[in-house]
Image (cartoon, rainbow, N blue to C red):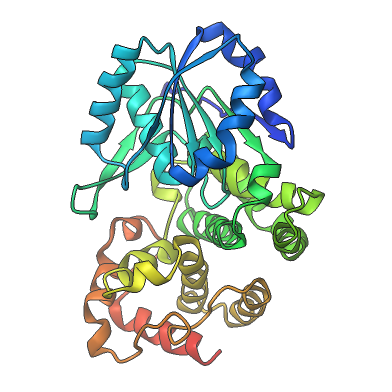
Length: 355
């Protein structure tokens, strides 16, 4: 079997943008900057100052409200009309996913500038694409990730704490889900390497997560915050790039995709927070009661909701019928060590509630 692995290059620190000229000058002199409204307010001036006159931002455009194929096509045409040599993506997951898709369709290199650390979108080789009505459409996979990611920890430290916290929750999920999904399999080198890197999605956060959130509240780009950002964006991204897709997610993410079917749930709960809750469910399904207790206590220290009641969701089985069905039939459940039934999920939900 022949395959290629393309890693995500990155620069991290309070002055990460100072490295943009040196990295990007080899790709041309004109860039189209795509971002979210708040993200551009937070980072565009710092980026423009760092570029000096060597690279020109030919236009700055908002990505929209969701990452859609139609928006990618529209922005790809705009990039061609502007004569852009490269695409810059600035913001959170949806903005960066839109920028990556735009670059793919325009045949241009893409560079990412995450302004929050809620996802690993800055370093992964895929986009999560939505339909025009806001519902999930598909994953859009690429041969390689962004050419380089510039992670300014000062900008991330000034973003709302809830985004860093949600990123921590999602990152913790990567460790537990990757090990669970790969259990009992003889892994090829790439997947085995990714599984081992997933340890870096858990153990550093046990040491640094609480302090990182404290630093974020103080708008301080300290050591702990940098370690959390590295876990959320780099370690998680590397796992995603290295392992087969079937090892990226398991029960925890499937619980999320089930719960978001509840009216109003997604608007009140961030993705990563719910994935962290899903880790508790996965541990209970797997009979790891003591580890679930320990993890629940840890999540509570981080301010992550650990019960359905706290998330505003019902516990009655009838009200959770669609949630349970989606959880056990979702694509993230296609490669797990054993069959998981609706009864097992509901039993785990009840146990987590009273853990």
